[in-house]
Each structure stands twice: as C-alpha cells, then as structure tokens.
Image 1: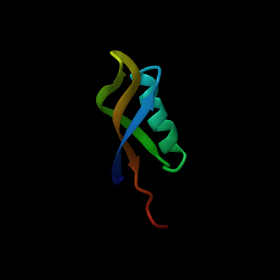
Image 2 (image 1 turned 90 degrees about the vertical axis):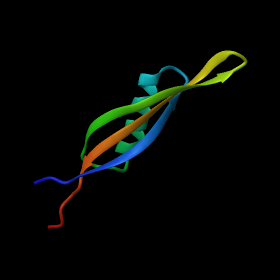
Image 3 (image 1 turned 60 degrees about the vertical axis):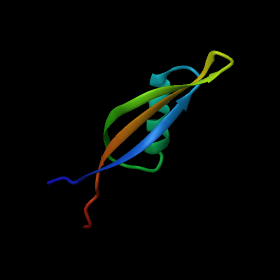
Length: 69
C-alpha cells in the first residue's frame, strides 16, 4: 500500500500559466522523486502599468513516500 505526500508550490513565468505550472514541476522534480500528480490550485498575474508582465500558477504536487527497506 502506498502513502502519498503533497507539497504546494507556485511557479512563475513571463509567458503563460501553463509554463508557470511546468516550471514549478521542473524545479520540484530536481529534488523530489516519485511525483505522479499535479493539481492546479489557482492562477494569477503580475500587472505593471496596466499590462500583464507575469503569470503565476499555484500547484499541488503529489508524490509517493518511499518506504524504509
């Protein structure tokens, strides 16, 4: 039986919300093994002078807890 853990992160991109989500996953995958699910919790933008200058995507990553051997 598997035990799952979660972590909430926010990815940032100057191109799109999708790219921001992918960035969060890319960075997390550098140090977390066994990621098997990503939920998008929310999106937002950074605005300057009436223009969108950044995209933010809040995600929840799910990963399997490794058992002791």
